[in-house]
Structure formats: structure tokens, C-alpha cells
Length: 83
Image: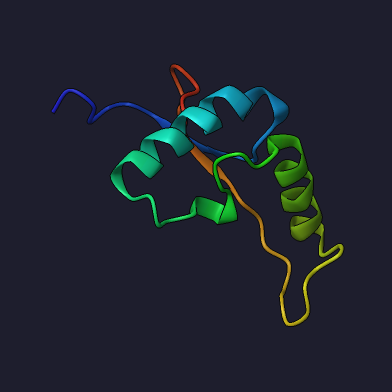
């Protein structure tokens, strides 16, 4: 396998990830249009989604019955691409 020695990292989403995240979502919907990864739907505003995820990680404005949670993107270290 040529990828066996590639380093991966977990990173909290940032504004710089928007283009790559939208590409990821498009690819995801092509294979399974009924799925909504991390509750993000095509047409959603990335900045708004990112603010919600930041708040959720801090326990701010949580929906009833929810607990704080943090989203991380799995990325390849050498090209910063979301996997």
C-alpha cells in the first residue's frame, strides 16, 4: 500500500476548510443522497454551521437533551485534505 506511512491528523474545522468541506459533502451526496454528514445539507451556510459546531463544543446554545460535543476533520498531514 502506498499510503501506509502517510500521517493523519485531527483538526477542528476552520474557515479555511470551507472549500474542501463543500467538495467532501458533494462527493458524499453522490454516493448516498439520504445521509447528512454532521447535520450539514447541500445549500447550508458553512460559516453558520461552523459557528454552531464551535458553540456545541463549548456547550453554548445546546438543544434540549444534548451535551457538549466537538467535531474534528480527519486530514492528511501532507496536503491538509479532509478524508
